[in-house]
Image 1 (cartoon, one colour):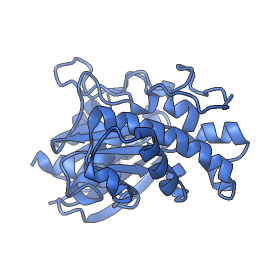
Image 2: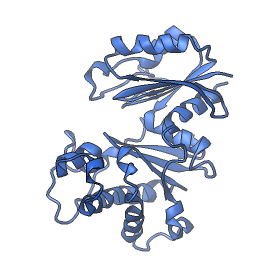
Image 3: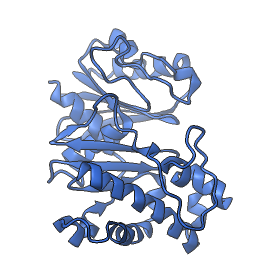
Image 4: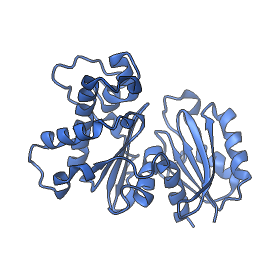
Length: 288
């Protein structure tokens, strides 16, 4: 069975075809331009692939309420050309196959739950830290939606003592994304994250904000595993720093076996860089 996958990101679109076992047969990456430029190329690709269903994991915010008149649309995204664009309806009118639709980070969470680092648990949080910060949540084996969907990159943060950096988020004074995303690192230090590998003070600050956010997610969602992905987390020296700070910030309040084995609780992705595509495939396979 051939299943289509579209990981629709703000910078690039990853198009792929695979099967329900997670084998990827074909893949193509194209830049995210305007809908008028991008969507015809996506449609042509899938029209030639003989797919039985399609999974779409899309940048957002997006409308996931099936009762809504704008279900399947991108909402108030910073990418102005895509605001209020009915991406799912456009694909459906052209491809005529069953389609699954979720956020890009929920798609990655599904991929990790089905094929990767969280396949042995019922709940997890996937956090991507890169150009932006987002979270995907799996609860009882299913992506969490609620009134809209998790926007965990914009939780409010307490500032690290002595930190006078001005949050770069245009909407918030001190949120996770505005303090700890890749662009925030570049604004704070004057260089991109990968150029700062040998600067311990960079990662001391970064790990403090990441740990603070993780503690909030633990307190609210009580996940059985936390997975950290995205470009910033290629700096693997962050993992032990984050683990130590999470335990310090929880300060003995929670008694959880996971915290006693925290290096296996806060982990890197098990799917490499394929969790988004594999999540799309898993969502679309469920429809069949």
